[in-house]
Image (cartoon, rainbow, N blue to C red; front, side, top):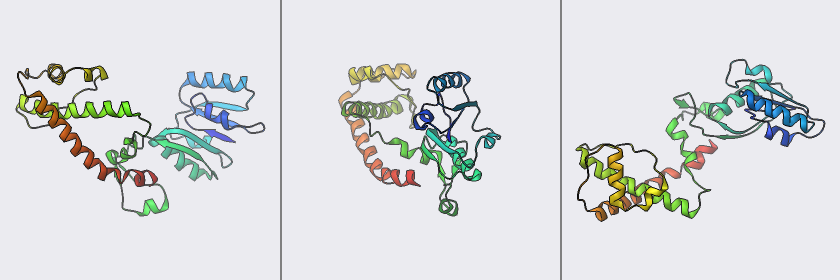
Length: 236
């Protein structure tokens, strides 16, 4: 008996269910439940589509020892809740693909295994986000655009400190990639206007842009050390 956790329309559960097996889908959105039920009925699958907030206190009543819970892209507390309830219920097996570990209501995270609970290691939300920082699916063009964007922002960061007379970081919004086609002078002038800063006036734009690339190289070197911990943290 499959239990599709945060099922949406139940695509995962239906994919796994073979004739003679049953399926229960837990989902919070009524529209997705209705659409999923129609799909299950059309395919002749013995499925219950139940409206349930899986983070609610009464979710335990939908889990039985004979269930095999499955979850795809269960963010943060969603997969933690499933693992805890399935363990307490006595489910013999489960299959989950967790993600977004840092989307949790807790300030600190402690691993759920016996070894993890015995360990003094507790992770902050920022640390939980480290395994998500890898962009293995990005192509060369996307990676290049990301590098250019970061270098330009890091150069602008030096400029905005001078313009404001405040040696502190100033958050800037996400910008369309079309901004990268502008000259660096136009880029900084537009961004300064967007952040309501004084007009930059005459600047050594080439030197400022080069300083941004130098800072990006320093960031990348720091990331080499940080990234050593990415995979071990995900396994933990």
